[in-house]
Length: 300
Image (tube, rainbow, N blue to C red; front, side, top):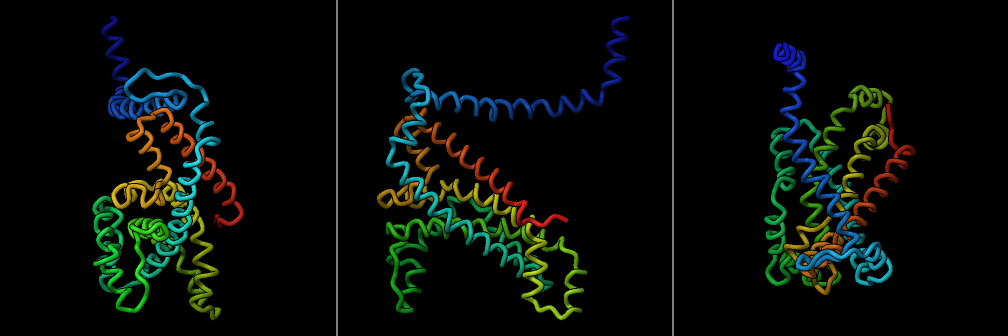
């Protein structure tokens, strides 16, 4: 009797059980590697731990030390914002221009789209190594061209003034193709009838772009801006490969500072506190952008 009832219950919920059995391994992995890891990092941020001795509870000491007593963090914050303020607008404008250009019905357009997207799927390490050669102040192609034109040749990665712009250039070159695809999808979703009606009214190409394309692209632009802000404050791989935070700490970003504190200074509690402060900063910036989008994003 009990066996028949059990089999009947299994038959009744067979589809649900099959779905749960498929999803459960993924949920377990997500719980261990995301929720548990986040919980452990939050716990560590209230402790002093050098990975050799037992962790010692220090309360908010790590957070207070970062905000009030760490003058180097101010320099790191300045470097991060400097790179982000170059990277975000340049990537936004470059990806939009590429999307408008690649939205045309031209021959071999699919090849051009794939070519511009390729840097986005190329390893950052490989890209950084190539750009280290391009930025070489002595025999790099960029300075050779500038010298042939009679222009000054910057020190790029070896210069305190030019290292941060160089990192931003590399990040823009790598990311523009990714955000270009988002803009391209947004452009192709704009009803063609709007452009036809504007042409009948005698609108020029610039008027169409300013009055139709940009307003209709505003939801896509908002999404790209949110992702760019997050991406712009999370610069690590290019800095690690090309400069290691140099010269003279001029390219040491927030993420690189977390890495150096954790795996070079062995201050895991301090490093996780830095990571949680970065998370809070990104969260607040995202909330602010969602509040601000009500004033400029067009919704049909």
